[in-house]
Length: 461
Image (cartoon, rainbow, N blue to C red; front, top):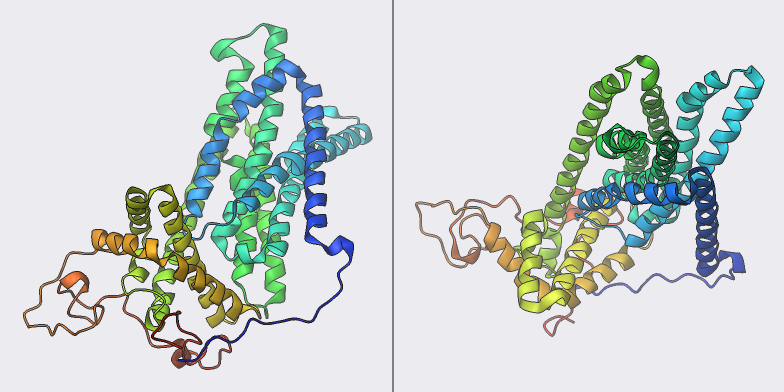
């Protein structure tokens, strides 16, 4: 068995101080912190201290639910929390500040130029606000796409990044609207269900907490499809995010302009467009997640042949139910540390599968071998805790045995088609290891005719 080639090396290159990572991180954190302080002062000035506190308390209610929903969608190959934290902070601070300043300036300029304040407000809400707000939120998606490319590999990643950014933006916007409504109620003396605050809370938090995420998710889908495109299609990779952004602006404009369609225009747009669009996008994301699980089941058998994984692991790692059972098993027998080790094992195995798929399609970078080796070595170090848990999960979720009328030799491979795993006689498994990828795509430079290295052990050099 061949040994792994050494890690690729690069010539030493002098870097300027502004190219260092800590300088970039510091500048980004400073920018977001200053934006947060400015937006805090602006919102408090418009709502008052009491209105700000009431708006903050009501606006925070849907945030954990939305974050949990997007995190659930990203369970197959979860991205790092720092990306989500950046996206939420960008939406709540930087994008909200850009929107408030730009919308106010544009609306005042139109009102002065046309001498029609009411028309300026309508034009600002239906035309200017969608363009400004969606562009400001899309900036966060673009930054993650450009500078965290390893974590941005498909549609689900685009949906999660865009949705969390829009959740942060909606959080700040809800504080402003709810705080202003509370101030209005303080002046008029209204309270209870008949108050403006209650009506605003019902419309923005109960009926449409997903409105802003739904708009920006269209932009994220455009970036996600662009991430799946090969490097040769430069024009398509540039046009897809732009098309998603234009769709997001159009839906946002339709939503903001629903009040101009009559007394029941809001409910008509909500029922005819928002709910079907939400259902369609939810189906698309769940379908994409199932395809990701299929990729895990299809790519990992190559590592079974090389000895890195056991035969049952591709099946267990390709099932969310089996993954959950494995983590629960590890928690019962090895505590929280064991559950975290199994979760990390699952994430690394998924990353290996996606990396190999990109390599077969010619979309892996020059550091493909080094990244693959690092992930496989992580799997090897965690195997002591993860393998028993995944073995138990595979047995717990295995399909019922299919009886066969002929005797089965005991030496047949567990996934060879007759003698099933754990002593069960089964039909041929759809997850049987496939032939080496070089036999399928010999032209691909990222797919050697055999696996370049074997897992460490005394039986191999």
